[in-house]
Length: 170
Image 1 (cartoon, one colour):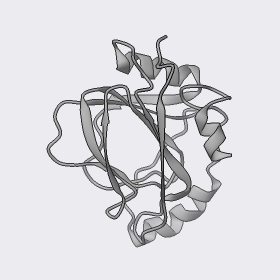
Image 2 (cartoon, one colour):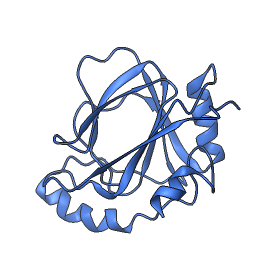
Image 3 (cartoon, helix red, strand yellow):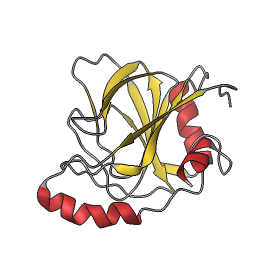
Image 4 (cartoon, one colour):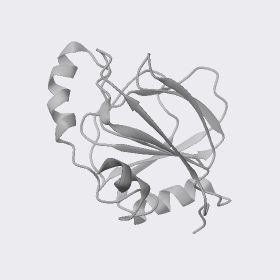
């Protein structure tokens, strides 16, 4: 397996905006963590090896949404995509093949219009089941206690038990 020996970490923190709950935990963006030729295969195999399973390959939904039952990892296997993270008042990020994002439970995310071809490899700690919420008032009331109850993962999706995620989330 090939991964970059040096990669940059960006941290972003988002508070509750009244629609998207977001999280007290930071969103972590790992820049150019993967240098393998087939990045999608590498991300999937590495996530599985580090207990981030229930994997999928697809694009990211084009409307603001969040998950209240689990954290999520997104590895960019091909292409590039502009994302809005943290809800409509959050930040816009461009991620490219080889980049990875870890989203805490509750953090809003969506792709922005005008994207070309790209592929995301997603996964969840210990294969957790995910829900799909958009922040309606009824959803939020039920989601807030679930988000608070989502445990910190025991492994980083790339580096296992001694990874960056463990440093920033514990």
